[in-house]
Image (cartoon, rainbow, N blue to C red):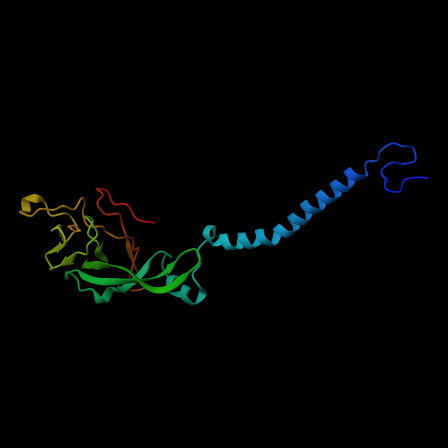
Amino acid sequence: MSDSSSPQTPASGEPTDEPRRNFIYAFASVVIGGMIGAIPALLGLFSFLNPLKGKRKIPTAYAEAGESAAPDMVRVCSLDALAENGSPQRFPVIDNQIDAWNFTPDQPVGSLYIQRMSGDDLRVFNTTCPHAGCSVSCDGKTYNCPCHNSAFNLDGSKLTADSGRENPSPRDLDSLDFNIQDGYVWVKFQNFYTGREHKEAKQ
Ligand code: FES
């Protein structure tokens, strides 16, 4: 009488490969099932991380104001608002803030001084003191920092020690690039590292 509990042994009496085949099938099922299950998770992870690599986009409703100048320029004021040979005027800088995931329109990002010499000849400076980041003011003759007495000429150059005043600033005031377009002053507003001899923009 044959033993039904030993199906692996064929009539010939030799063992079969069936247990190994079953194991391979089960293993392949787990691997393939895992791969299929991982695809949605990978797609989700990709779409989550993609903004970090992608180009930051300004929503259409806010893009129009930036279309007439370079995208990194901010419109500050009309040229007519600046008197020729006038004193420097201070302006807040309002810009859209964009990071990988968020767009926040019309945020205060700093301030600047503009002095119009004549025509399109302007001097534009970031108001941040290059020494340690306080905000400079202007009395019409010089720029002055209230924190540690740095002072600057109206052309942005450091007042020298022989002016009778200690000046801890490591460099001149930080000038900003600008252009005039359609009667408006557009400025490439940047903040710079303080305490350094050379001007280096923060990213
Ligand atoms: S921060 Fe302006 S002098 Fe120190």
